[in-house]
Image (tube, rainbow, N blue to C red; front, side, top):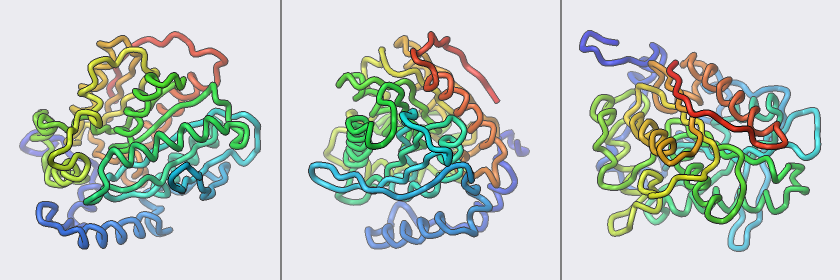
Length: 336
């Protein structure tokens, strides 16, 4: 903590925050947003930045593939254990970023899950938010890929009875909505992992203590979140269908692991959603990572807690994807 008693992220994150220069999110134009996004995504995929984002696990193969849907073709990044096996568990991954981001920025974590569970990890290169592209479209990309892969499980070499969803930030929101939709449609999920999730896009989105406490945090600011909200649920649309915290009945969902970094404006979104899941009877584990910032899981070179969190996630998924039947799961809370 600093002298004012505010919890601080690791030094590397604070130095990165000083060096990087964000645009004015309140006045950014569409053209400026696209240019910023393209530059950020190129940087995220560069080999130099692997020092920060982590090098892929060599025991996993990585390739881009295409999923052909009825009305569009989507790219997915597929991670498989190098030692080929048939009918592996499926982990559907959704990257974060909202209006920025790419599946490749999560190579470190996704490749490790593929190699160490083992499992086939399919990471969706979903549409990014922009004027004219709302969150409902990004969610449709994640959900439609999940359905298509499960329906063609044999072609993918996955076991349709052992499926989990995982995501970070916006991706966690999409993963949470996918778990809710899965219950409604009868698609069985074994687990959902929500890492620093955004869970409320309604008028109460900013009414959580963590929003004011970490309004200007190094990795995510309230100003950036306000742009995210405008793009995700444009004025004149109803944000409740894309706000997991607005769902009245959260019972009967896949067992959840909610991972919350404590230096994060949306930390209380994750805490409250975990609480709502528990209240509804959905088995839920909440883990908190002290001094970790938003997006920490993709920054193992700067945030040591990323490795602890990745091990926790692998342990959680292993217990639910390697069993022939889902075991009874106790509700607990942990703090790290």
